[in-house]
Amino acid sequence: MTPDPSTPDTSTSTSPVPSHTSSRAPFIALVVALAGTGGTAALWLAPRPALPAELPPLVVPAHDAESTLAQLGALGRSAPADDDETESRRHALYRAFGVAEVHPSGTPAEAHEREDALEQLAAEEATRGTLDAIRARDVERTVAALRERGGDDERLGEVGALPDLLVRYGAVIEGRRVAPPIVVHALAWARWNGVHRRELTEGMDDTMLRAYHGWLVYYGPAEGTDLRSGALVEYVRVGGLRGLETEGYLRLGRGDPGGAQLAFEAAYEATGNVRLRNHALALGLAELDREDPRPDPGS
Image: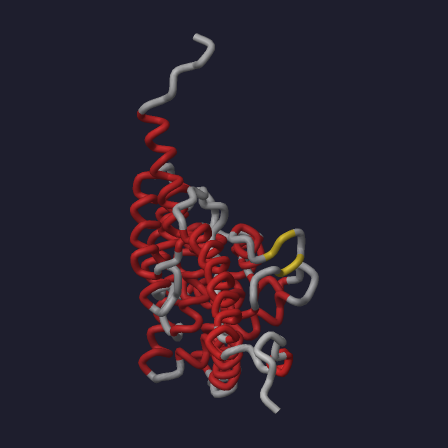
């Protein structure tokens, strides 16, 4: 039977939509989604002045710190026995030094003689290859004594003035240790070297150096800007991160916003982090306001 051309052909009502039409819907949805995401990204990437707020944190990987402390313990266990003649004399003088740091006694000449002897004995230990082990053992003893209470000479001989140093450098606040253990060990290590007139960082591995210099940079006394700048150079040298950004904060701290702007710009160029670019922009705009203050609308 021939279909009547005047009658609509309802057989097509269940046919699928042509393929070119069906593919456009998801395509349009994708374009809209990308446009929305791009718009948000564009807003985020656009220069938006933001004044620097706080220094980045010190980062010393836990695995590296644990490895260094384990090596320190093993090294200390290889030190000569306490009754070794040279070590016995050196350790007695070292303990006397610690007590005198807290309770000065004797004459300046006696103190100077003790310091000379400690320097000489440390040199002898270095010559016979035992200095690293003895230093490690003393540092372990010092950190253990820090956990104890009391002001007896036995404890003071091990810790000396280190507790005051830890407070000064923000490692201990209101009697509570806030610094990581590796930082406390590093500061104790530096004190030991100073007592024996050695270079403060002598014998530290890179992890301990990062902890030592990094803590001075990020948490050292606010007035010690030269110390902190010098520590930053060493911190970066041994693998510390975000050096240029930190330089920007340090320059701000010593009243050098122009230098801080340059540091943040360099940090942005090195990392592509737009937050750093925005810090530089904010500092630049603040400098323009200082150079060309706007007139008072009420005048």
